[in-house]
Length: 147
Image (tube, rainbow, N blue to C red; front, side, top):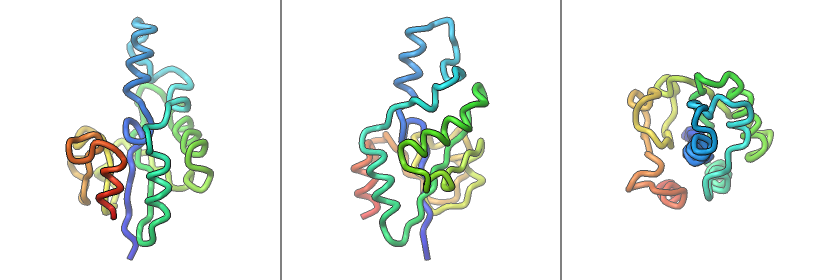
């Protein structure tokens, strides 16, 4: 039986916080840099994320989905996140993109996310691996877990 792994986007696959903070410094009167058109589409990859997700996807017994919460400040984020996925993971991953404000509603075996609560992660019924934590500081640690 296949096990399902859901992977968050912001600050797990792409560097949301770095770009958010940079934009805030450049334009302090724009309190919500994520509301600007193009913000999500142009986020840089977190080191090793794309290779790691592709590797996990290639392992027999796992199916990978991208599970991300939308920005309430930017209605274009739905489209931009989809474009980001296609640009970085290819068209086949477009059908594996789930955008949900409540990640606890999604049934899966694993969730790789930088937060353990706030967008329903606290109600996720599978195993939550907190990316960026002491135990899972980077993609190498995540891949080691799934060996």
